[in-house]
Length: 612
Image (cartoon, rainbow, N blue to C red; front, side, top):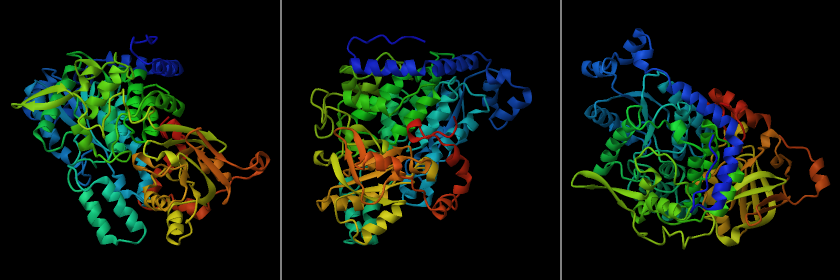
């Protein structure tokens, strides 16, 4: 293991945080790298496997392709795809394998679809029982990736996925095959539709009964209207930003429209790139590439862009897959050292297409690199290291090229490091007698960073919505929605709560949400202490709260406290969820199949992993 050498222009805080992560992870990382080295030393699959194994693996290939792979030993690239044609973000992948196979043949290689992984949409399942499978789908995707690659006849792999749990799942799975070179292939965002702010206003009016279902559906359909990712900066688009910062994409591939000529050119470049980092070229397996510096670069990019809080769970799991241990203190300390350089909905009004037009990931990464907020001396799948990711791709006379990001195209969306939107990344760790939680402050008005009010307790989001509809919440309050953690019901996102709480806040009430569930990148302007750990079902402090207890959520001081006397607090028993409600969480829509994951899952701060 090397010891980090301070890069001359790097911020000392980033060096210190990275070094403590390296030291904390030394034993696990060393064991992980030893496993990779052992796998790398093996003979290629077509030589190592028995003849029947090889025959099965390539039986369906055209004769010419079979000859090249088996007899001529050309590189064989495995494709793992999250394609389905219900998810707008993944529908474009339908035609990608044909393009990839064609490009591989042009360069004397072969490509096979190794397998598909599930891809569910939180937008479809939001507020339904299906949402309770969402977080666990990440580890299911990781296992699906492992199943696909377990045929063990591949020299490299391409990962086709975009959205919330899909990219973390593919990345976790790929890191468990850390001996392979891997490139991620995005599909891009849909075109801009109804603005996110306009959509949110219709949602709030619907919550107040001012418009009906017809008007709401019209607005939602105008916002989500075609192939590609949703255009707000939630978990899906945060995924793409982080992969750019980790050097796992073709540079600048993240936010190019699915049906542009540039998109196909970038996909073909992904094939050329992964072939260039096989053993026949500049060999760079993903397990060596993703080290603690690369993980820190991803964390910095998340914070500098006000990205999804889901990644405080997902990237802990990703790091763990590479033998690296990070926690929420690391995120919080980085947030204090990294400024906020972009405002994209929900922490601004722009969508990701406007973000891309203003300079996109290339602009952000250049500003961070030049300011010493990223590790520059890291490996990437592209030639040129991380500096290559500060450039913008373009087609010129049919040829793919890159240009400098230039100045910000819109100072309301992207600002230089010297004049940021905020001196910090807009993420705070909250601690106190209610446990550990996180809050995304970048979208919350400054006068809402501290809320002290009586608690109103709910054991489900449906119960809160019912109370709102009855007019019972027209006052200052801290809404506590508990029994929403990984053990309880898979830790669903609770976005259905955003419109009613925003309505209450808009009426002038001081309102906050405290929950052991998730809110992700779209939590918006209502202050929310989320991911509270230990969770209530595990006997966490939220289970001790009572209706009317005064709760203080202070994002300035970084505290989350029940203002109850110490003796009384210590003497209180933890409440338990009603047996019937707990039982209901385990049935219907396939939830029975995930019972083992609910039993074995680790805490949110440990990445909510179910496999280790």
